[in-house]
Each structure stands twice: as C-alpha cells, then as structure tokens.
Length: 288
Ligand code: C2E
Ligand code: MG
Ligand code: MG
Ligand code: MG
Image (cartoon, rainbow, N blue to C red):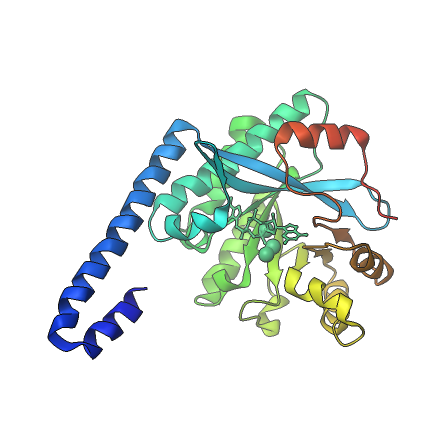
C-alpha cells in the first residue's frame, strides 16, 4: 500500500522517488477506476441484495434475514469485501448505503404484498454512514417511501463506529432507536470492545463474531468466549445471535447454551430474494 511504497521509496533514495510516484499513480488510478465503475454500477442497477436467514435456535423458525450486498459485474458476482472498502473511502458509501436501506425496505414491501412479510430485514451500516449524522432521516424516509413498519427493519452496527466519538455514537443510536428500528451490534468481540460502554448502547441484540463460533470445535477453552458473551448478553437483556455457524456440532452447542438465534452456512447461505421466498414459504430450517 501507499505507506509501504513510501518506505521503499525512502530506502531507495532518489531512484525511489520515481518508483514512489509511479506506484502511487498506479494505485490511485486503480482505485479511481473501481470507484467510477462502482458509481456506474449503482446508477445502472447492478447492485443487488442477497438474504441470509436468521433462525430461532429453539424452534428452527426463520425470524429474519440479513441483507448482504453484491455487485453483478458482467458474469461475475462480486462480494462486498472487494468493493465496500473502496466505497468507504469516499462519499460513495453514503449513496450505496442509502440504496441498501431503500432496497431492503422495497423488498420488505414486495414480500408484504405477497403475504410473505419477513419479521425483520437487517442491513449493515458503514462507519461513514453513521458519522454523517443523518442516518435516522435516511432510514425514516425509506420506511415511509415503502410503507414499511420500522420494527421490521434492523441495522447492524459495529463497535468500531463507536470508538472515536462514543458520546456522538450513543446519541445517534438513540435517535435511530426512536425511529423504531431494531439495532444490533455486529462482529461483537472483534472491535475495540469497551464493555463499559456496552450498557449504554440502546441496542437489541449482540452478534457473536464467527471467529469465536469457530473455536467451539476446539473444546471447553475454545467455547469459553461464546459462553461468556451469551451470559453477558442475557444479563443485559439482549438477544444473542451467533454468526458463521458452519457445523452441526456448533449449532447443537449454541442451542444448548441458550443462544437465541443462529446464522451460518450450516443453516442456509445468503441467497437471492426469490430463493429466500421459497425457503420462507417452507417456514423453517431444520435445527436438529
Ligand atoms: P457481516 O455483516 O459480518 O456479514 C456476515 C458475512 O459472513 C457475510 O459475508 C456472509 O455471507 C458470511 N457468512 C455467513 N455465514 C457464514 C458461514 O457460515 N461461514 C462463512 N465463512 N461465512 C459466512 P459477505 O456477504 O461477503 O459480507 C462480508 C461483509 O461485508 C459483511 O460482514 C459486512 O461487514 C459487509 N457488508 C455486506 N453488505 C453490506 C452493506 O450493504 N453495507 C455495508 N456497509 N457493508 C456490507
Ligand atoms: Mg452483518
Ligand atoms: Mg457479522
Ligand atoms: Mg462478520
């Protein structure tokens, strides 16, 4: 990246200067190209949402869906890890983020019209959207535009959004909460968790990060963090969701420990809306 290039350039002295400008140019051009392509993708309707079920651990019923962004770039379906970080470097993420919220509400309205209303659809929110200061308005307008109840929309936020300016972050969470949407803390345990703040966040749910779920297979020490997070969440009156559940053993363990909801490839992968409809019509996912 640019820092490494700068370092190498310094090492190489004068010759390095040429290398440095060349390398920086190349990176800047590549970034700009992706950014331009992404802006066009948004305008041309090449972005779409896939949906992954959240399943009640006790009953196996689908209780919601997480909307996950995809980019249909020609024949390729590009995952968010390859373009969200680029979008996050500019205000483009605000437009993409607003589109995601709007599309999730539009999908919820389409499902309602089919009599298949999802209890809730969750969307991921980027730090920049959160920091922009008008997320509550963006959410409220999308809900009104599509005639969707706030309680059927959930926002997944991360601890990293709350690190720099905890007071402003808590204030925005409060405003979002007032709109009536559900709030969950995503990837819990991977950020700079401040347990001291956790109690002040007006959130409804904690999502245990996949990296901890993976460790369940490693026995009692591996599952210690999962156990602790479930207990902590329940003591705080929060719903606890496990993400990235990939095996029957993980599912059985989480269920036994009282984890409320499960999400992961073992239950179902993210899928296009029409595939989700078929699954939803079936009502539940086997939880054994
Ligand atoms: P996330 O919000 O933590 O979403 C979970 C990710 O884990 C998704 O990857 C999902 O497909 C994947 N996943 C679910 N179950 C399993 C499993 O059992 N095993 C494995 N290996 N993976 C599983 P995806 O769709 O590639 O999204 C990656 C990340 O991109 C998301 O992590 C989220 O941070 C971000 N993202 C996705 N959509 C959006 C969006 O609309 N806006 C923003 N700002 N970020 C988004
Ligand atoms: Mg998420
Ligand atoms: Mg997550
Ligand atoms: Mg994650």
